[in-house]
Image 1 (cartoon, helix red, strand yellow):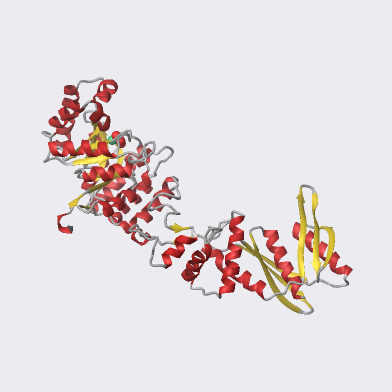
Image 2: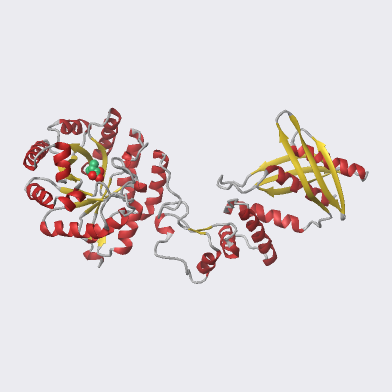
Length: 507
Ligand SMILES: CC(C)C(=O)C(=O)O
């Protein structure tokens, strides 16, 4: 099969249709960076970078991209959307250094009649004039049939009349947009097959929109039905619900249509998605196939267990293909296998009893809706192992901490020492200070001094992803010696109280 595979041209329109995502605007430098990445690393065949006449900023962006593209041999892969407006768009493109136009024409009688208020013959004559002018200036022409999908549904004769006309014109590609994202996969098959069979010598691109969440499915059917090129955007950005997403569409073509191939490098897709997310401010949903944060994370313990046993929950959609790695979530449903997988990734081995304790701690945190990450694990382990060596003769049983405006924080604490219960109340400069003052009162009743706190350090596990844990490490001085205790909790004061209880058990 590989030798006979049909090559599908990939045209990325992130910088034109993708920028039509509400609220998104790329700067010229961002556009240039994305354009360079798409052509040199992702290796799409063509990019559509702007609509003509839009703004000064857009003009600057096109100029910068065409300048770079020219000196790197990509100029014929850089396209600009233009209008049937005599020579206005042509001049704009020429001044910006662009060489390929995607001429926006009408693909449905409805649009032609009610928007342009023209007859087909008049429209065709104006299109012909623009095409001839562009060709004279050395510009390559592709044509869009805007609203083509409605055209096929409701005015097929018009679409065929248009195609009969355009096949005689010097255009390179005919681009068939499902402008409103209304087509079903079955219709895509029917309409594209009909057109490809009727006009065998012509090149047809299919441009899907995602209004019914059928963008990728429609691309799949379009390619199977014989489309020669596909328009896609990074992260599925685009007008309204967006276009078909590049990463998903490439994975689908690679896995489900063996008779076709593309030049796109799968391993670059995640990187370019993240870059576009940053530049556009358009967040990738965590469950977005291929590029979403969660899509290669197994959460259920049974899945992690199955992965260890003959990779039972693996599919062809392996994260490594896209420069990603499989992760195992830590939380109340994660179970022992998830934890073991994370430990293995960190190169840590634990005894069975310690593993049980760590698991128990993660379940407790998960129950509190805390997100535990792999970076938290060493902290949890050291906390669990730390507690193992301490016999609990002192327990902080209950406490109430208050914090209010213009009043000093106060604490009521109930503590058991060798099975006997003590209660005290105190105030302090902060909640923890009030807590220590209450403890001092308890120990004074027992004629005992508490160690002096000499250092108090708070840190969160590195990585910045976890909201689960905070570690407090307190240094104490007692009888001329220094020692440290640590406490781990999602609440900072509670983590300090846990560190203090450990200290009380050590003196
Ligand atoms: C502007 C046109 C080409 C478009 O994006 C569409 O019809 O979907």
